[in-house]
Length: 134
Image (tube, rainbow, N blue to C red):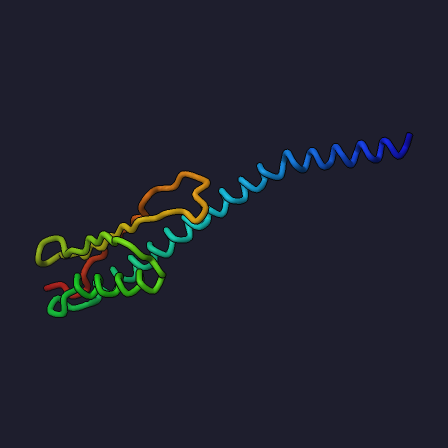
């Protein structure tokens, strides 16, 4: 009688494992997808912030927008992003109070594709230019 109880318990454990394992695996995959998405979003935000800072500290004669764009493209290439990159780098405002706006959008596809994520990762930053007329 005792052997039957042990055998039945083992069979029940195997069935429980077979039923819960796919759900746990799916949840782990979803966490990995979302974690990767947020990691890529943070990397892009840091690159845009860095490019805006470099551009804002560049003199007007040297071209702050070009300096920011060059820094951003270098950073994006270093992070391993491939594909179409949509840039929006411009100097805005009146002559005495200008700011540099840096924006970027890159296509994104999750590693596993288990959860819905946006098709693009976007980031933008605006900083006041350091080289202002007094």
